[in-house]
Image (cartoon, rainbow, N blue to C red; front, side, top):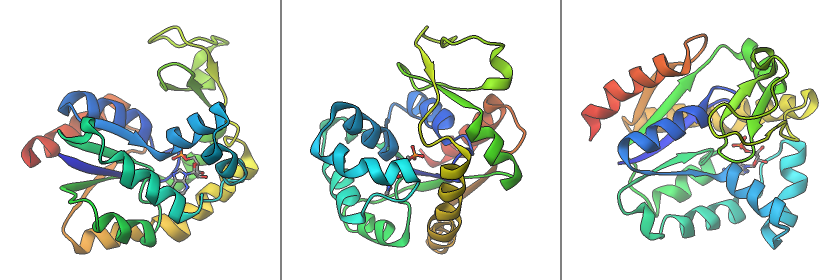
Length: 210
Ligand code: AMP
């Protein structure tokens, strides 16, 4: 199964992506994770990407598309993959069409009023990527799942979140229509539902797609 996960920043894509990839034995490819790993390791791509990710802007399309195009040739993609955070605009979607055949696009809709608080209060595990909200942690600083250290992403601050949401509305949201016209959109509501409930809904639909 070859899937795309769409949704605003803070919609819960990362959490669902991990669960979906595990259940269907497909690889989770997050372009945001790829950029963060490159920045951490000080690679050439990392040096280029840093100013964009720090300010909430998109890394240039040619760079991002080349990374994904290469990543999809790896052996672990043979059973399928889930793209999380890619494509982010029409240029990337059209490029993807030239080297991939997507089976479905999971679109998580969420009340936009929830996003600023969700993202600015988010804490992420350095080891496994699990997300938490500071309001439920009661001062705990380690991951309940793997014991890893929790941290706040540099771009989870009000100013950068504002920019990321604007970029989503202007550039990424039109992809709902793009994939809708191709008959690929699978719509879900992520607002207040616990992650497991939403995952149950997604599974019901993806099981039929297999
Ligand atoms: P994310 O983890 O998906 O929220 O992505 C974090 C940041 O990485 C974004 O704000 C962008 O700066 C960059 N990024 C991730 N995916 C893409 C993409 N498909 N195109 C361009 N930039 C991206």
